[in-house]
Length: 75
Image 1 (cartoon, helix red, strand yellow):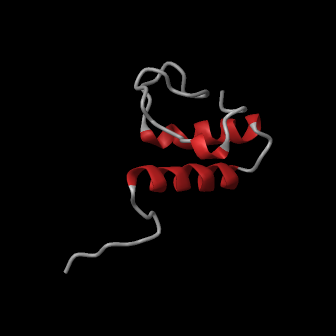
Image 2: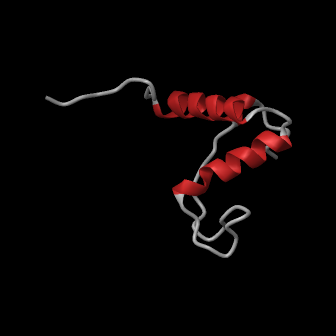
């Protein structure tokens, strides 16, 4: 599915606690493994990891209405 999905529908999620990506199979899934999923998606789509990171970040920003580059500081 990831190989045929347009970049507009691409998200890299951590949402399945019992389905960790290779090479972590058998362990509990955790946010630190998202990079493994992104690397797999990049290989699957014959693109760079940075492209997957940019596309999935942009889609998250659009969906959740926030800006990853904006830093909010409280005084």
